[in-house]
Image (cartoon, rainbow, N blue to C red; front, side):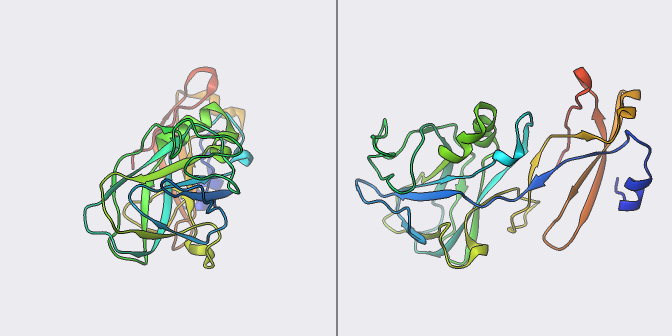
Length: 254
């Protein structure tokens, strides 16, 4: 089912709720170079080999608390790639705070990681890395982000996410970092829309009633408003069921 904006404007109070969304750039990032005390926090790109790790932090404090994560992806851009085909990788939730200006393979700030190479858990689904340059690769970090977000907003920034290769290779990918000259190619926290490679907004299941009149029924109409790469779009779905304490349950199949 679809709708135009005027349909939403003319809908009775209580029939429409809006799902806010956004695309975020990293607040900080760096590379943990295998067995090295060198800090790469100011590098515009990193030559990422098999045993190296990349870590990213995003400031989501403006979102506030009390939401649940519906979907989220970490977008990284391969400036160049010399790896072979079929090299897999995963993203993880970092479990310790770190500083961009000092973090390295052994140290997270002024003290050591619990385990050299970073402390992490809650892995994402596996992806296959690009074996050619000038291409995005995308991690589904819904679970790691939700775990951070439910614990503390600042964990997304000060702990963040770590990515590492899962298969051995002696080649590398040059990855654009947050200081990369082309701002559009820097890392992003967003949401994948179908098979598109352009970052779309992260979707939060935070439905905002237009008035108290929405309490009148057990089922209500839900609208998702977003800005896809090629323009403004509105998608409306039925099947948003009101839960306890008048909080709607979010259901939106892709």
